Amino acid sequence: MIQQSPLHFRCRDRLLNVQEKTRIIGVLNITPDSFSDGGRFLDPGAAVDQAAQMIEEGADILELGGESTRPGALPVPVGEELRRIVPTLRNLRPKLTVPIAVDTYKPEVARVVLEEGADIINDVYGVRGEGRLAVEVAEKRAGLVIMHMKGTPQDMQIEPRYDDVVAEVSAFLADRIAFAERLGVDPQSIIVDPGLGFGKRGQDNLTLLRHLGALHRLGKPIMVGPSRKSLVAHVLKLPVEQRQHGTAACVAAAVLQGAAFVRVHEVRPCAHLVGMLDAIRRA
Image (cartoon, rainbow, N blue to C red):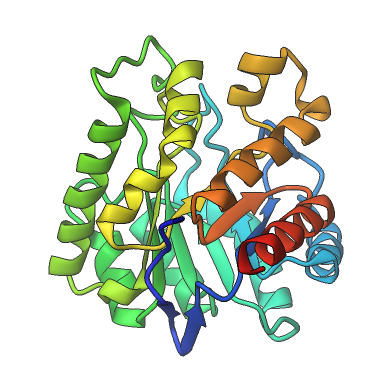
């Protein structure tokens, strides 16, 4: 029997039943240097058009990002990150009924985007440090994605090593969940993400995906973001623009192990795939 996530996920005034369907998070990077779509949506008009297309194609949640976290990427100043994100967020918020997530690890950015109407903060650093970001999330009763990353984007792919990648990622996430909850984040408002491609070798990513169900022991909905990542290149030896089918295989593996959220750049094919898999699982 496939293990499932908890019944509900809460973000602001929304209560999502995470067992009724696998939800698709459409990724919109407002950056010049993201590995997948960097530079395409820096103009707010282009970003809004892309967001509308993603929703039409089946995205249940839209995620905005203003800083690339690809391997080797350098941090962006708070002001620049906000300059990239806020105009698009302000334009989209009154137009969209779906939740909007923002990919940031900076508490100053989280505070502003939550005030502007964001519903979820996706923290690739997994609320490390003193926890100011978690406090901002708690005060707004927003959702929080806690992701595992070994190191930082600058050094995460410099010979990462694990004795037991599943156990080590699980232990990190359990520790960060407890930390966020101590700071006031609603236990129903936390999602966990194993961080495929963030401080992992190719085999580490495959092992995490193969044993994704082990993360259900954490008692939180699981999100997976395999879209166009290096784990596909590790197996298929393909450039970024040719990784769609490999991405689909990873999404299928995640869904069949009970992932509640899948984070992708190309929504339509993923929506078709996930819709069929959900129907088969319910049959």
